[in-house]
Length: 446
Image (cartoon, rainbow, N blue to C red; front, side, top):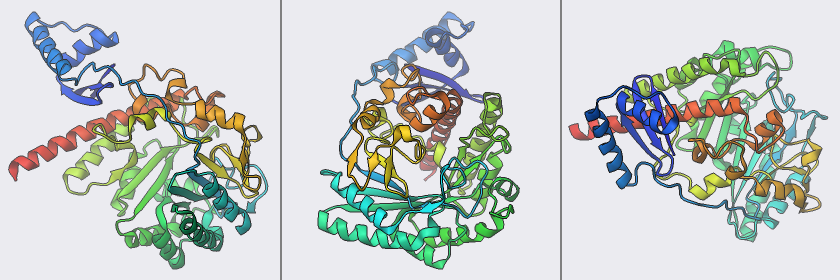
């Protein structure tokens, strides 16, 4: 399978089987599109057609075009590798687009007890089999409302890990309202990764991410986040924003974040059914244009030596995650689970509170086999419509929770999300090609 696309005036053909990306001229792109994707046949001379076909034949002989896709099968393990601990079903912000009902998860506001959190650590160790490295994400609501509990649980997990011959990697997501010196010091010591929520420009952030009294939170968090990032050194972090239908010019927000000293950025489309915020099909053309604007600015900054890491443009066509992991898709509900404050277990944080997906309790130590089997069987090959999609080995069939919430079936991808994913991948491929070309030029001059 091939995918022919253009980024403005630059034309590419991507070979799905080999993972090869080739830049080509307009005529070659049109020829390939017509012959293999049903496009309109270009008017070309016989000489040009013969030239194009010779190039195609040569690449095919080298295994770089029309390569047969490797037949691999999903790898599903019964070993639990990660837990998302909902340490707090409460929040000190009231963000309108919050999928978690402003931290309450459509239930009462509550904190996870230290006893339950430690029981979750025990559950993870006891169900991890031979897996040595285990992951725990402290989630909310706002986890920093329970910082002391997190500290105690991390210490407990470190102690249990030594006894069990395991290693823990911890992460957390925070709105940074309570990110003081004590929290910064603790995160830098103990957290493998920290995700900080900031939507970009002040007016964009404040329009959605409000405090309990209805005021914007930008001025309350920006300096905390800057201080944390300055202290972070070479350890992992992300400044994560969300764009809605209210700020479809989100490239400005990404560049705003980059120019404020944040070099690791993610900007996610909102997942909501709130009508005035929801991303709909009618917004896709504008979003596509915006990703190209962002890609142009991203490359400009890279060429000036001001490059930053933008999560959605990180495309690795020369290795990356192994193919078996890509076809296995997300481990939610099978190797990865969420634990809510009372100890109940769900497939992931986006299924939390949905009793149809209740999988057990850390106090019982058992998992609902039928529900787990449903997730174990789900993979790229069960995703409706993914078979003939060029992006399948990169996106792995999308998020099960998003699919379920928008289509009613976790194996039926939500087409609006698919369209955005495909555009991001094309932009990522273009940026990869341009950066490689720039490096070759630099190497020639050195």
